[in-house]
Amino acid sequence: MTRKSILIAAAIALSLGGLGFFFSDTGSERPAISAQDAVKNYLTDPHPQTRLEQTSQAEKVAPPSKDSGSEKRADDIPQEEQIANEHSAGMPEHNLAEYFRYLQTQISEGNSPAERTESIRHHLLETLPRDKAEELIELYEKFTNFERDAVTRAEEWNMPESAEETLELIGKMQAYQEEYFGQEAAKSIFGAEMKTMEYDARKAIILNDRNVSGQEKEQLLEQLGRDMWGAEIYREMNANKDPYDILDEKLIIYRDDLAALDPDTRADEIAKLRAKYLPPGY
Figure 1 (cartoon, rainbow, N blue to C red):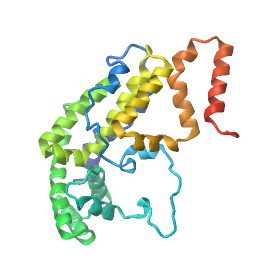
Figure 2: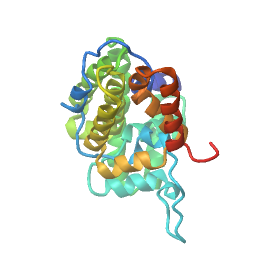
Figure 3: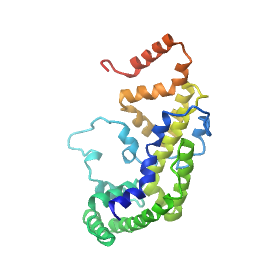
Figure 4: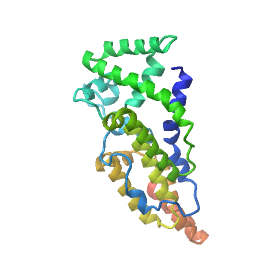
């Protein structure tokens, strides 16, 4: 596949990844799905299925350095080695779609699909144990066929214009992936992407519900995070957020509460939020 074809095939997944934040700043009408219903009937596996650094959620936090003498940090371990370690126990719970696209854009060489696939085969055999490399190669070849088919399928799907429509599209994408690969393989390849998309959409639904108070939104967002990521990962997601990002989100959460106040009281409450979430000097 050409680089252009690769990007087209991945367009739905990559575009949807940011829609939750787009929707979180809009919406004045009562949503089709209420904030309370946003924490029910999850589409993706409700149990944590991937580490934070394997999803785009990791880009939204800046974890501190964890150097400890000669011990290797996860960021220092080559991606191929991480894949090999996880693959040793069978089908890994890993965002393989992102890894396969890395192979396509950074590793593949040649003028034909066969040549590019062969260059990736050679790379995997050089960097992984043979049995694991062969297993990944077989799955990769099926993935490339899926991407070609997905270009046609994507023409049948409209890009969503709301968080609710995003959930509908995620359901269609998930069904298509499972039909093509089987449930477990689809989860291993696309699970991290699907979970991140669903989380962002459901978070936007909660933020956009003008019939729910800020305090209840806080509680629902906490439940959503724990339900979809587990307590430990969700705590990690929030531990090192940029202070301005935290403040911006709080202002969205409490925007309706603040709008109901008189101007002077509103200014005081915003000043309190700034003092609470922005460290001295910000």
